[in-house]
Image (cartoon, rainbow, N blue to C red; front, top):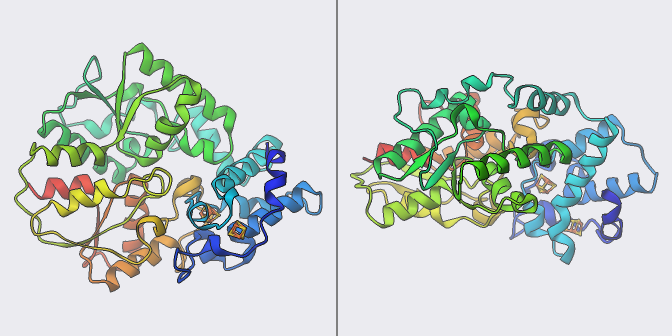
Amino acid sequence: MIKQYGDIMHRCFRCGYCKLTEEYTAFNCPPHRVFKFESYSPGGRMWLTRALLNNEITNSEHYREIMFSCTMCANCVEHCIFTFKDDLVNIFVAARGELVNAGVIPPGVRDYLKNIQISGNPFKLPATDRDKWANNLEVPEYTDQEYLLYVGCVGSYDEQGQKSSQAVAKLLLRAGVSFGILGKNEICDGNEVRFLGDQGLFEYLAKQNIEQFHKLGIKKIITVDPHAYNALKNDYPFFGGGFDVSHYTQIVEALIDSERFELSGYPVIAAYHDPCYLGRHNGEYEAPRKILQSIPGLKLIELDNSGENGLCCGGGGGNFFTDILGSGEESPARTRVRQAHAAGVNIIAVACPLCAKMLTDAVKTEHLSDVLEVFDIAEVVTRAF
Ligand code: SF4
Ligand code: SF4
C-alpha cells in the first residue's frame, strides 16, 4: 500500500543526488537519461506519487508510463542522501501495485502479466519447451543432488539466455558438481512480476516454487539469473522458503579457487558490466571480477559507471519485456556499448541473461559486431579452457 509511505514521500525535497553517480559526475537513473525530464528521475517519481496521494493529479497514461519506466536499478537507493533511501524502490513498487490493482497499466505490462498467468512464462511458449536449452547436454533432472540449478524464464526460452544457461551447466558438469534441473517442471521465479507491482501473482508463483522445492527436498540452489537469485534469496523466506541460494558466479569463483578447473587462457580486453540485481540489490561485486581476473591473458578494465555506480542495461524492473525505455540512441544499453567501445574493450562480460540480450542487441544497433562481443562470464570461462 502506497499510503504507508506517505510520511516518507513528503521528506524528499528533490535535491536530485539520487539520479547521479557517487561523485555526481554523471546521470545514472536510466529513465531520466532517456527522457531527460525531472519527472522521470527518482525524486520526480516521489513528488508525482505524493501528488497522486493528495489527489492533486490523476493516474493518467503519462503518470503510468513514468512509473513503469523505472528499471528498479536501485541507483537511487545507493545515492539518495537521506535515511529513507532504502525504501525508494519499495515506494516505486507500491506505486505500481496501486496501478495494477486499479487495472490501469500500460499495454506492455498487461501483456507480460497475462502471459505469465496463461503460459507460465513471458514468451507465450509451452512448458514442454522449457528444457530445450539443455538439449545435447547431459544435464540430469533433479532427484537428490546437492544443488538445484534454477535457470529462469530468460535462461530457458531466450536464445541468448540459453547460451548463458548452457555455459553454466557445462562448467558445473566439468567440475563434477552434483546438480540437477527441474526441466519442464521449472516455474517462473516471479521477480519481475513483483517489481511490476503484481504482488498477488508473485505470491502465487513463490508459493508454487517453494512447494515444489520442499517436495523434492531441495536445500541448495544455484541460479543463472540474478533476478531469480534476488527473489529466491530475499523474498521467498517471507513465504516459508528458506534456501541456501547462490548466484552461479559465486559457485564458479569457489571452483576456480579450489582448482577444479584448469584455465589455459583467453587473450582479450574485457570489461565487466554489473547487473543491478547482483550488484546493488545484493552487494555481489567481487565474485564475477575474481573469475575474470583468474583467466590467463584476459585484461580486465573498469568502465565508468561500474560497481556501486553501475549503469543498468535498461532491462530491469520488467523493462526487458515491456520496453518502455525503448532502444533509442540514449538507451542505457547503447550508451554502455559505446562506452565499452571507446575504452578499447573486445568483450563485455555480463553475469545476467537479460544484460546479455540487451547489450548484444545494442552492439548490433551500434554496428559494432565486428569489434565488440557480449558474453556471459560462464561463456568467457568456457572459452579459456
Ligand atoms: S529521493 Fe533522496 S536524493 Fe532523490 S531527490 Fe529525494 S531526497 Fe533527494
Ligand atoms: S530505481 Fe533506478 S530507474 Fe528507478 S528511479 Fe531509482 S535510479 Fe531511476
